[in-house]
Amino acid sequence: MSYDSNNIFAKILRGEIPAHRVYEDEHTIAFMDVMPQADGHTLVIPKTPSRNILDADPETLARLIAVVQKIAVAAKKAFEADGVTVIQFNEPAAGQTVYHLHFHVIPRVEGLPLKPHSGTMEDQGVLAANAQKLRDAL
Ligand code: AMP
Image 1: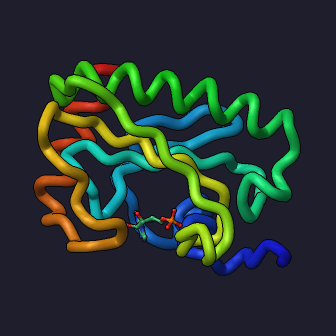
Image 2: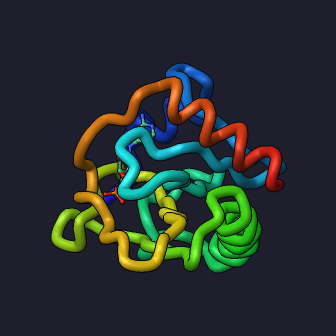
């Protein structure tokens, strides 16, 4: 499978559609998931166009996971979480729905189950407020 440069995250990277960005560096951006599985659910993506982990180059992955860690630590603090779930899907059979490599970083509260994957669209005001909490923690 090849990379489709019209996927939604490529459009976010090009600034063609809006996102609640919380972090950016030379190689990476992070923004709020619009259908969060828990408060503070964030996506971390490389600027390099990889479809998923199966075609990404190791250097891209190495840089990306360092930012995933940074966001996970900040998210735990920002949302007073007890833990953080990190998820990454590859190809439709594994649950991938957007074909630009990304890691999900999801703050977890003890005893609170995850909401469904790609479930309900969150209110923009809530996403904006959560993005600010995360920026403050970063
Ligand atoms: P995956 O199944 O791992 O490919 O997950 C894609 C994720 O992207 C899902 O959790 C969606 O809620 C999320 N998503 C889809 N469109 C957008 C968007 N425009 N901005 C932010 N997150 C999105």
